[in-house]
Length: 236
Ligand SMILES: CC(C)(COP(=O)(O)OP(=O)(O)OC[C@H]1O[C@@H](n2cnc3c(N)ncnc32)[C@H](O)[C@@H]1OP(=O)(O)O)[C@@H](O)C(=O)NCCC(=O)NCCS
Image 1 (cartoon, protein in one colour):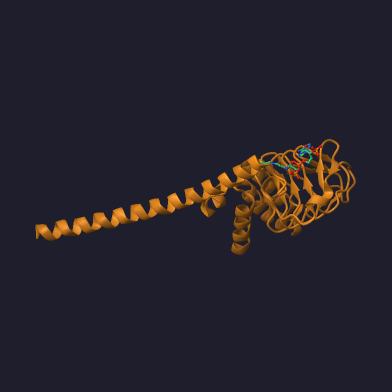
Image 2: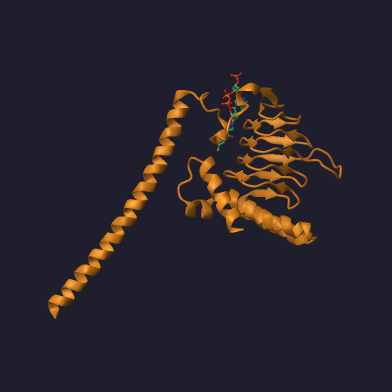
């Protein structure tokens, strides 16, 4: 379990340029808390403790603003950034390494008892406010633009934007690894690239300042102890 938590925390650093320290990520990322509570709820759901599972999912929603049905299946390192307003339906499936931003709905469009929610492959990124509706497959590495409403299957590596969702520029994303906010590396405008660099530099500098502050306060404490000892020796 600890390994899974470490893995979840590490994946935040790979996907959120604003992440600073492991402690901060562990304590202050509601997306992680929602996923951790969902794991407990999902286990209970599978054991037949359905009311308790729903109760945990409800508590998670109150605490994080993220609603994940306990029956939904989430892969490893699924990361929900910001999170508020995310809804993941009962039969939704998310592959490993998917990233969702706030306001995303993986919803159903029918009352049928079987599969009625989307099935996301690995490494899918769903932009803020996007809705993916119905039992449709979304291929590995696909990117869904913010506020898109997707009601048709999305091919692996495809990018869908707009309402209703339309496929754009599919060949550019084939082998693209994850990038924050799903922007394509090398396709950014120079301002966006400069801002990404500034964010990374600021995070690095903040970390360095934090380490230096710690060292300074340690050496001050040591100095105080040494001064105390000298003072006591002089008094004797
Ligand atoms: C969809 C997305 C992944 C595309 O990124 P990209 O590959 O860099 O694509 P581009 O910016 O070159 O845009 C491609 C086309 O889609 C359009 N487009 C991009 N995002 C769009 C969106 N959300 N809605 C509608 N159209 C969009 C562009 O205007 C462009 O259209 P054009 O070819 O007619 O000029 C990205 O714009 C996006 O929405 N990412 C999610 C970001 C997010 O949710 N951030 C939240 C952080 S808190």
